[in-house]
Figure 1 (cartoon, rainbow, N blue to C red):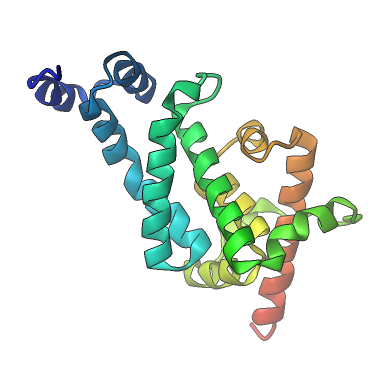
Figure 2 (figure 1 turned 45 degrees about the vertical axis):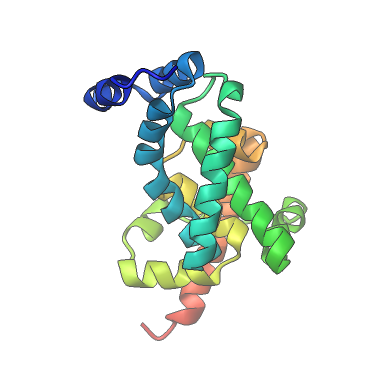
Length: 198
């Protein structure tokens, strides 16, 4: 039987309770109030990530619901080895990339295999990306391949560590560093081609 006071109690605790504690409370009680708090904390962020990758509001809304259901169904698999937010973003990014592969057959998603065999020369300074006009930044992010956009967003928007990104993409830290380097080079090349007259 569900304790009717539990949703009120959970709401009062929502600012004090960590994600990991909410997961534990949900797993122990199966009370939906605890999952609702997780939903409140993360559904907007998940929707934002889905929208930036899928570029379609309706698909992003559907994806958000699917991802939240996936989180609910797999909550017991959260091991606590990484932050809960990292685990959620891992599910989100993987869902969106799989969605693009299946539905749109986006060839840019497969660019990783090609890039793994390429030699890369000069590096692109982080400052170049960080000092850009925001409007232009968004334009270029829409033009580069999805895989490159994803890894740049993880690194610079979500401020994930190399290790966290490696865990999400199931790649070694050295492979992630190389992917970031290549994505930055593509970004800079696309920027220069688009805004060469400036």
